[in-house]
Length: 349
Figure 1 (spheres, one colour):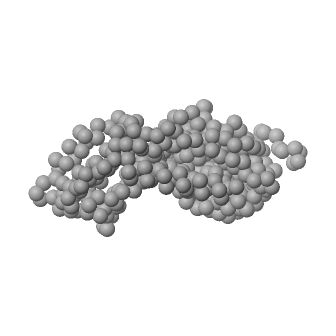
Figure 2 (cartoon, one colour):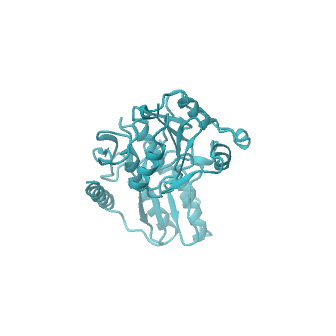
Figure 3 (cartoon, one colour):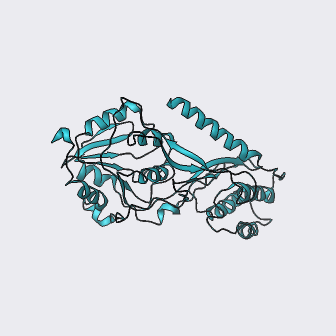
């Protein structure tokens, strides 16, 4: 039963958190400028999971930013010194939270083309008319091509809603799933979607957790498995094209990784933004919270997905801003071209 699986997943996550908290004895740090800085540096040094993959000399980075603290440094100054140090991780899952602001590394997406315009989609492809449920926008496009846009994995997807969506779209040549600009959310929504596209249990990836303070102290990989939806649910066994851009992150990145492993799926667009670590939170003496990637996630081939998922071979496509402004979405057009000449399902022929 799915509920049993979710309970097992919850127990696993609680175990991961407990191991993270108990993997070593942390020193006591005073609640002053240097004490708070050192506490933050040590938390990242012993518990952040991608220092080796990113080739970071964390000791050198720590010394560089610690030297910025002087007798004139205010608590506000300290926050931004610490935030700048955390930005060296180049990780959108890393935040430092105080009562006056929260730091966030944005360059994982701001330094790249957007490759998407919601207005262009709504006006030129959906003609300002679509169906929607569970946060999903869907419609059968001209040429009998099914289209589904899912903008946020934070929105729970109901099994009954998916039944209606797939039943309404079933008489189509292929299905386009668009997750561009999806910044992530609930990993459990991946289970719900993937279960509609498989007929047997699959291993979609692996997860490990820290077992000690060393940069390479990790557990053995734990498989992440996906099961088919229950009998009676509406399934989709035809061709699927998944549209991605750089702003696909975290759960959206993991979804792209799993979908790319399925034989009937092509990933079209730009490389995703990454975010392949399960976040964990801690705190430093002043009371500021720190959130960071603690448990790395891998694809089915045990390849790290922190740095993003590439499109399928021959399917890297970009949608220039000037074309989007004129009503042309090159990524969506490419996907439509891939499907437009495919035969209709037998029950529609």
